[in-house]
Length: 195
Image (cartoon, rainbow, N blue to C red; front, side, top):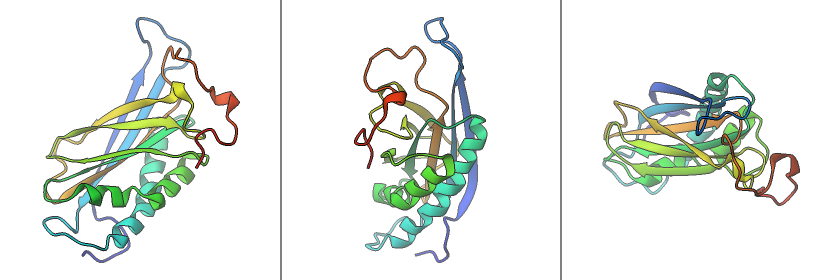
């Protein structure tokens, strides 16, 4: 197991996506999405370890770093967010999950001004260049349907077999031309997907 209090980062990768129209139409401000991915060494690559507590603890620093970076790249108020991890082929999916637990979530929530809503998450194993769709949901209540979205992220040279890519993604609004009904952000109340 690696020693130290933080995830050993090899590189950071930032993505910004802006959609101005959907089906040839706009409906106000463009939809901006941004993400920051940290690529770092997996201390359990090639070996099984029962105690993942140090990796879980690394989540707090990662959540803060990636949340602040994604919010800055977005350049607007964060209204939705999500998190994801891609574990290199010498590791286990569980290693990515360890980095995304409550420590990461609470730090991400604090960094972007989120409420107490559950933060959508996904993880998988993959080779360098593997893409992942980071799920997005409203920062204050999971059940705000027009904010259900994703941002596809791919780091061309990561993860190496002994690495993990950890991602925080944010957006400034819900989908363009959303019209599937459901809870509106202005009507959020206790119990609407809050943890």
